[in-house]
Length: 361
Image (tube, rainbow, N blue to C red):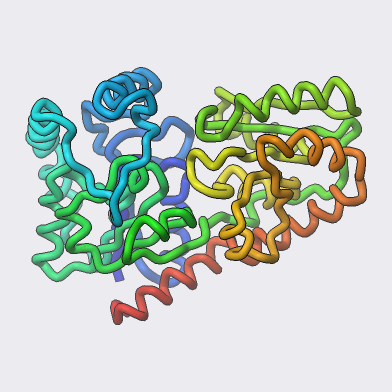
């Protein structure tokens, strides 16, 4: 069986993990990306397309544009609908995407031919996007009888919405974001895959205890709440606070691995609960603090997280750093839990179960 992933970028290296999992089962797996990742992850076959990027200038410009059309929240504003549906906000935006699709098609069509991209059995359309905003490539796949999976990761569904032409022909939709189960009538859950053998866990505590916070986006992580609280506790207790920001992946992982506690997020602005930041940390043997709503606690009742909110973080964290035995126990439980639910091959078993339900294998 041949499996192809198409994604704007290999954001946190997940595409490389899926490739490893599929190949472990004897299948061929490749991935194509639209632009290089901001970090050091493999971009697979990268088309390096213009007019799309993960650089800060592009993202700021896009946010300003959406502020004009959507109000002060701009590109952070959730979209209504079940599922939310993408529509251009203006005639100018509509023409922009038409022009971009035309400009891109020279590189895309060449790659389709040279890489024989139609010769796969299952196509994973990450971010529910594909090559073109008008969905023409995915529609072509559907007419050829190919199996189509759409993977949604958060802002793609919350803020942008589905591309109708793609959503209509997708037989399987998957997500690792629990809140997205309430935003689409036909979507299944997959725990984020991770190579849990990548890091050797450390269950010993530093002296002083090291607490870290590593936001990729300060707004979504609630960093304006987290950072001052951590700095205040660092002045009152025997702890060291480390802010991990603007580092290479290798640097960030080395710093994280030297810590005891990670604070993931509060306020649930970028989705509920936790993401790859916590998964990586737990595999290293860190204790993770994050905000979990009651629905999330019901969904993962045996979780090892320390549940916090913006207004409880200070006292909860202060109590935690005074209880070294509790930290040691949570470190071990975190490692055990992340292997059970997020190990790459365990997650792949769930995906292949979905394939089997659709009689694709």
